[in-house]
Length: 374
Image 1 (cartoon, rainbow, N blue to C red):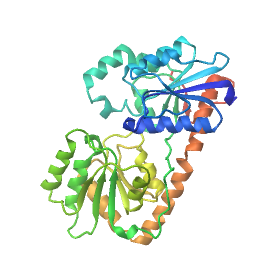
Image 2 (image 1 turned 90 degrees about the vertical axis):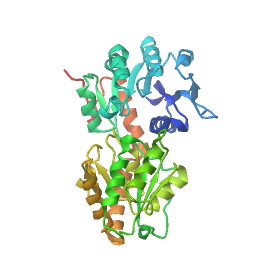
Image 3 (image 1 turned 90 degrees about the horizontal axis):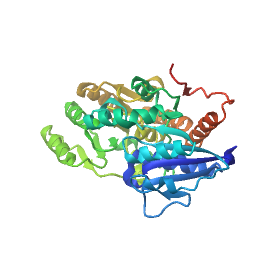
Image 4 (image 1 turned 120 degrees about the horizontal axis):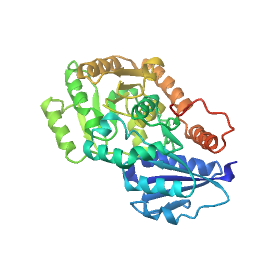
């Protein structure tokens, strides 16, 4: 049935500047190609060289109308992201041509995200965005937490809960062990939502002479790097906290494998791919209850605390008390868990099952799809 469906993955920005949304949509598309599907990537902002199966539809999505649909096949159009004219044009194209229409919000309905430029989003919600979502044949979210958010917004169509996967193309196993480096790692966007002021404050509350270094990797939102430097000086932790730029590919995996444990103190995450990556690299993880990572404590992989500097400090100190042998044991457990749950080929199979279920109503509904609300 793979060759009887034409699958269009639509994303506004597929370039490196597109962040997590670009990375996920590219992985899904490339996975569909590997599965032998008739699949295409429709994008508005692109890297310098397009993939053979990629179609440039311009920044606003105005070029989507020119895509040559195969009228002999059933079609699925899956758009990633919200709040742009690109999403609206993809929706109109799908409905005009009778395509099965799927939307991935990628956390853009989470309360923290909705409170960014709130008046513009409330207006857009009333004018077009809620209509687009309720006209979809299915939504895809990345956690049970995001499912609850979507339902609370009054969105009615079926919702598939499918985790994101880890892009392990540049992953390597480092030898010998680097656990004795005593490095605590943050690797994500440097943005207010990531809870870095709490982390810097928590670091200053640790007992003196703990012997650890905190490395903060990531691209900073405009003006935010200066704010973080001000906090590092305010809390007098310049000797042990280093603010670094973003890292990719092999350098990213070197950062993970040069650390003893990982921290993501976010105020909002619909998934948090860096946590999956850290687990894959064999790191215990500290995060907050604002993220959908309850499995950390359930599976013995780390700590999940409130958005609170003292609780973060307590978790940091607990991690620092672990010896190399204990860190290795947790790391092996973390890596096994990640490989079981966040492997892209298995995740792409879930997307294919969801698309087939939508097109062929006689197929049994996968258990990870939440049906339409009454």
